[in-house]
Image (cartoon, rainbow, N blue to C red):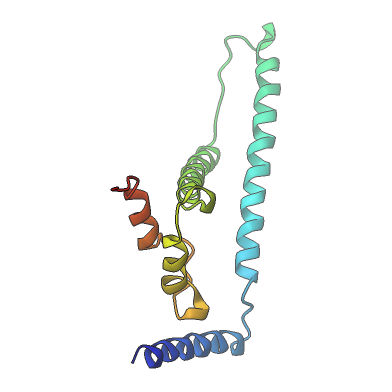
Length: 145
């Protein structure tokens, strides 16, 4: 029973992957574009911090003291988007730290990954989800003797 259901899940994932490649869509381009977008955001943040430092030095000059400063709506929207992205990035880093293999004890998370998330074993392959074994192992810090 178990092996037949496992084989069935494998066949479904194989068919799903084949249908994606038959459509002509690339498997990895979307992820590469997302990574490039994140890098550009990081570069932009670094560049604007540099500009802010330069502006601060320039604003300390006597000729600009007491003058009004204007910020456009689009720049405010851009700052809000950046703040939202930074919060999401911080959450991703926290999840990554929670799932860090070097900090986990035992093989619970390994087997949980094999059965629940590993595509070759019939799992869904989602990177964002936390497997049950990882949650369980983090709660079981003490060992009864």
